[in-house]
Image (cartoon, rainbow, N blue to C red; front, side):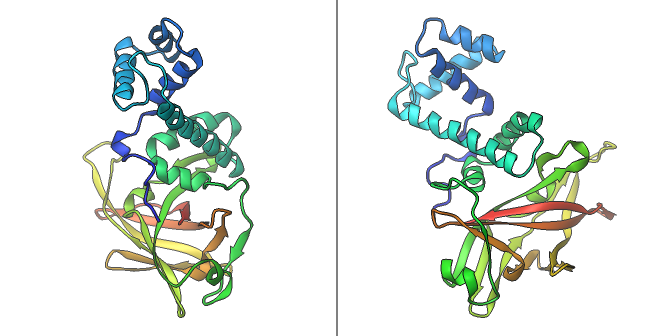
Length: 279
């Protein structure tokens, strides 16, 4: 499976504000004074808009007089669709309505777009699919996945119920190497996450601290279990994961987890999050 074949690397992707420039330009449809109108609507200086439109012209998205090429229309259309799909995803998981525009902006700016597009809505998928639980061996998972080793994309989110249900990428997401690995055989299988150090700043000030994952817990049959952590690797057994098969043949799922970390000798409080994964 491709790892982002249809999207550029993160550092080459446009910022949310730059996408706004192009969407306003599209609405103006070549009218005179387009750059000035974009600046007024977006509240930015003319130099920022001019520089970005020149970059788009160099890439073939716009002509030299800033008309959209066919390539540019398709390219912008893909981003507009991603914004719609992300908004729909946030509504499905119960995010507060008035915060959705801000959350869409934050997710697009903090998650690489290939990963986000696969998470919120895969190609050809129009409705969330009914969960399919799989057994340790055989069962529904065997019908949709051959034995083997797979790269699994994932993101870790937390929903702050005490702060108007804000959906945020969890700090724990930075504590793992992406992607994860899924291993599946006749004897069963597991999702393997590889940990890494993450930098954090104390709310009281002071120098940055290095955090390390200490524990990861999940629920199985109503009982909380601690995942095995050895040599910086975390194993989550497949039987605790719930997979959703999508119409395009892909798999996705979600698992509620609780993580703790340490910063030096200081133990951070437990944090509940959702591990969203797909392949």
